[in-house]
Image 1: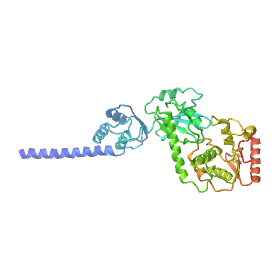
Image 2: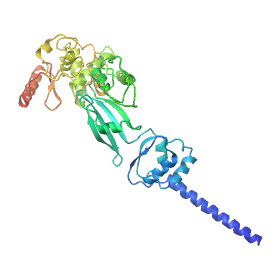
Image 3: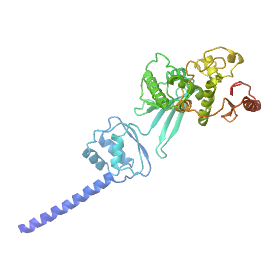
Image 4: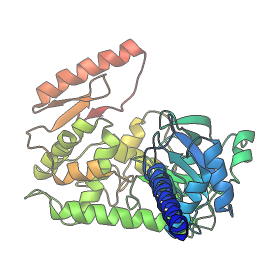
Amino acid sequence: MWRSIASNALTLFIVLLVVAAGILAWGREEYTGPGPLTDAICFRVERGASLSSVSRALEAQGAVSDARIFRIGADYSDKAQLLKFGSYLIPPGASMVDVLASLTEGGQSTCGREVNFRIGVNSADVILRELDAATNRYVEVVKFDPAVEALPQVYVDVVAESDLRFRVTLAEGVTSWQVVEALKRADFLSGEVAAVPPEGSLAPDSYEVDKGADRAALLARMTAAQEQILAALWASRADGLPYASPEEALIMASIVEKETGVAEERRQVASVFVNRLERGMRLQTDPTVIYGVTMGQGVLGRGIRQSELRRATPYNTYVIDGMPPTPIANPGRLSIEAALNPDSTDYIFFVADGTGGHAFAVTLEEHNANVARWREIERTRGQDGQTGVQGE
């Protein structure tokens, strides 16, 4: 009898072990295998949320198959207390392991809403965007110019969200004064700016910032970035350039930046000005004249007057020899590269060609023919102005 009882108990024990092993194997497969999501979702973890509430929300939204297994896996891997508040993109088929890693190991807020404060040459605007989880692309919610428009209600409603991301984007060719004045209108930044940074010293780029970030500290980041770019590109510059220092190269880069918006032309434009310097010619470039009038404080908003072309200023390259004393804007990396590695050409003239680019010439005769074509384009368009003609 006792032998029979022992045998039955052993059998039951073995069955229980097999069942337990099966449950463990099933749980492991559920935890590490592909998840149930068929479409990506943007999952939000509230500040202070518990693992229990997060796991239930994940199950309710179809991101995990079983909230209990998710909690057990988080406890077993010692990540139960590492949840980070924010919004996170969970892709289709993500395993529980992947989901847990997103919520505990990744950077805060990989999806959700983002405010991008863009500082351009002619204006600054704020764009509120939201990530469409299905396409993994941002969709514009609202755009406005804080200098002339009241804050839209949709912006006011979401700007207090704890996981809302912020960034400041500088366009190539903005002046330091424009940057400072625009940053004053960024309501998500704090602090005063004691002085406008030197012209050309800020790197055009997109900078992610925290809400309440200090404006002066942000400008310091931009300055450090430009210093690193200039130092690296100066070290790999072409031989024989007519620059005595990196600062002179930065001046040339700013002129190239303001002369063309066509990326493929930058090295050609740089070659024109290098050739002029080497031949002892004046640069004769309109953007420097404009800077001498505005000193970078806004845009001119009209054509250059003949009196301004004749006026003696440190920036009027129709009057002075060589380059102006400072950059005339903040150039981007590509313009700095062009200034330090210009194309090898014989060009000494260029003029707008009506397509957004320029026609280049070696001789004055060729240049005059290009100018005549540009003047005809201007007449056809009903325009009348000096801008666009270089080296007349």
